[in-house]
Image 1 (cartoon, rainbow, N blue to C red):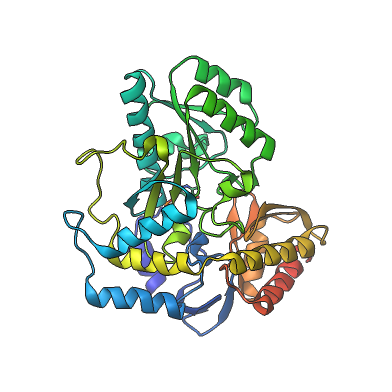
Image 2: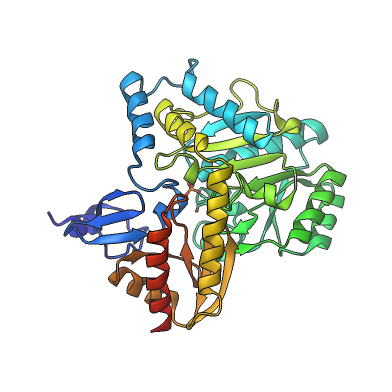
Length: 387
Ligand SMILES: Cc1ncc(COP(=O)(O)O)c(C=O)c1O
């Protein structure tokens, strides 16, 4: 079957796919149609938290699939309630709205922030401050939130009410807050699509102070950094801040689409029946998979994530052809002396899948990748950078 030809013929050309057809996988290993094996350091862009077809996750998902695949949100349903309880327990947030993707989780965060501000301060306080070089999604509103002009081209007019500031520019945030038109400040703690760039600790701390002082909601987009990726449950725990809203997707579902918007004390009751909704949000099968993922993210796993991260950093920093390494936990960006695409291609030819973030090579391996596979993959990556 000419899948690649049919893909080009029938699928909208939004993706510049790598010339690789993955037909199956197990854990951190993926296979193409000829049976060639690849160590997968991409995890479907931080989605397959425990790799492909992980036994426990498959069992949890299929068990639910055989009980009930969908109810709609007109009815009570166990898996999403248990998942919401678990998310609140881990995060300290108070309530959850479920959706199906990162963009939708962010849409909900924006709606919650605007509703909170509108109810408390009136209709004029609707601006959301976001950071330059950020990425928050592809819908018209989350594109507007995204502080990178390249994504905006040809889609004007975007949703109004977004103001971009440079990371580090606290004066502009304060100015916006004082003007009384801002409802929230929204940011990723590590700008993933922006090139795996962690925000400086001091900036984040002072940003949180300004937010508290002016009652701006602190919205943290943890779509990529959440659910153990950085070596903590959530990256905001590393930064020692208490957000008002946290958004999750990607790794939460372990491979099925789910988004979650965690609402803190200030906004926990902002939504009322009919004020927001989603047909598929909190789907029982996706929720059962997510519950399984969360039940396995514990201190032992998080310590291992940190250990593996230290190993990657130690191996790559200063290695031939490596100009710099950024990131946290198992979210790593590598600046290479050769173009990133060349390194990515060579890695693939040598049986290792790595992906790109801007001009960097990006690693997002499964959280439970074995030391042995990681060692083999890092050796290949080093060879590809050094060639
Ligand atoms: C930080 C962040 N927010 C939002 C999104 C959008 O998520 P989705 O593609 O699931 O809509 C992404 C996707 O890469 C992301 O990295």
